[in-house]
Image 1 (cartoon, rainbow, N blue to C red):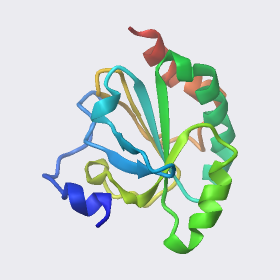
Image 2: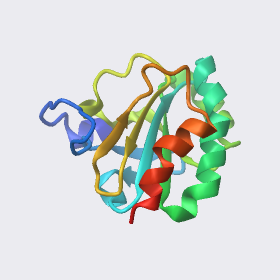
Image 3: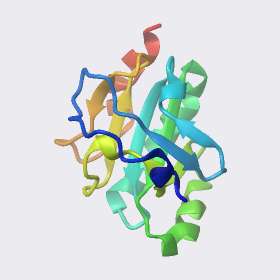
Length: 158
């Protein structure tokens, strides 16, 4: 039984910036369980991506560099691969280059985040579990300047 089935669908609710982030849980590539609830006190970046998504792959080095620079400041990044099971080895291979955690969508529960159909898709949750950024709709992708503008202020708040 996958994590999604084990946790159940739960009630539907609208996702909105400034409101508590919906629950998120996943079994990571390394076998550990990740829950958003357990990360209270950290700033969490949830990034939905796929190996076939060129914009996803283009922004991952910036996310990784930012993570490496700020992981000791309370930053947690989880990349959720939307790849098919047949592409599992490729996704694992890609993630070997990055220091942040990853999970497959099939091993995650994220129903409250809406239908993930457009990639890349990124959510930022503050130390209190409040959604502070719901994707970068108008932007072509994440880069260092955008991470500095959006995530760094959240890390500096204690």
